[in-house]
Amino acid sequence: GNSVTQMEGPVTLSEEAFLTINCTYTATGYPSLFWYVQYPGEGLQLLLKATKADDKGSNKGFEATYRKETTSFHLEKGSVQVSDSAVYFCALRPVTGGGNKLTFGTGTQLKVEL
Amino acid sequence: ETGVTQTPRHLVMGMTNKKSLKCEQHLGHNAMYWYKQSAKKPLELMFVYSLEERVENNSVPSRFSPECPNSSHLFLHLHTLQPEDSALYLCASSRGSNSDEQFFGPGTRLTVL
Image (cartoon, rainbow over all chains, first blue to last red; front, side):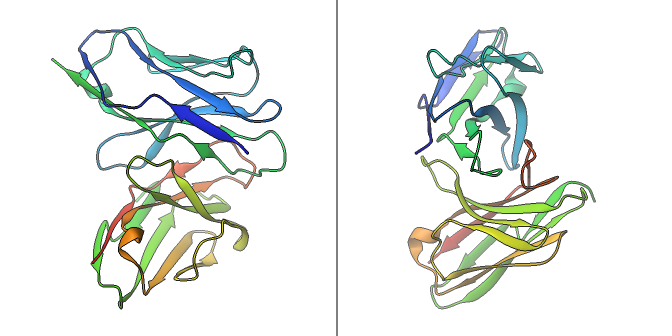
C-alpha cells in the first residue's frame, strides 16, 4: 500500500537557519505529492505541491522537489523565521484508484527560536 | 464566516454519552472529509462524502456515524466511545472528490473519559 515517512521531530532551529525536513514515500506510479502545514490551534493548510517527477513546488520561501529516483520530496527553506514554527505534514495522492484519498506522514514539528 | 469551521473546538465526554461534531464549509465545495489525528500517528481518513453521498468508509467502528445533510454541512455522531478514541478530529472539504487541494477546519479536540 501507499505510505509516507517523515523525519521525527521536534526540529529546533535558530532564526535564519536553513531548514530541511525529509520525506520519502512508497507508492505505485507517479503520485501527486504535497506539504501541508498546521499552525498551533489551526487546521492543516496546503503549503506546496508537485504532480510529476522533477517538479519543484514552492511557496512562502519553502521548496520541495519531486525526486522519483529516490522517492523523496524533502522540504527546504533557506532562512526560517519564528513564524514558521508549526507542524509540517508530507502527503501523497495516488495517481489512480484513490480518488482524493490523501496518505499523510506523521508530521514533523518545527520550533524556531530567536 | 469563511473557510471551514468546526464546533465544538473542545469536547469531553464519558463512554456512555452521545455527542455530535459539526463541520460547515463556506467555500462552495462538493466533497467533505473526516480525519482522525492522534499523537505520533499519520492522519487517518475516516469518511469521504461527495455530493452528499458517502464514497469512502475506512473500516471505522460503528460507534462513529457520519451524516451529510447537504454539501455545506457534515456531522460526526459519537456514541459509546472508548478512551482510545480521544484525538483531534479534523474536517476538510475540496472542490470535488478528485481535486488536489483539501481545506481543513481547526478541528475538535475530543477527550473520552
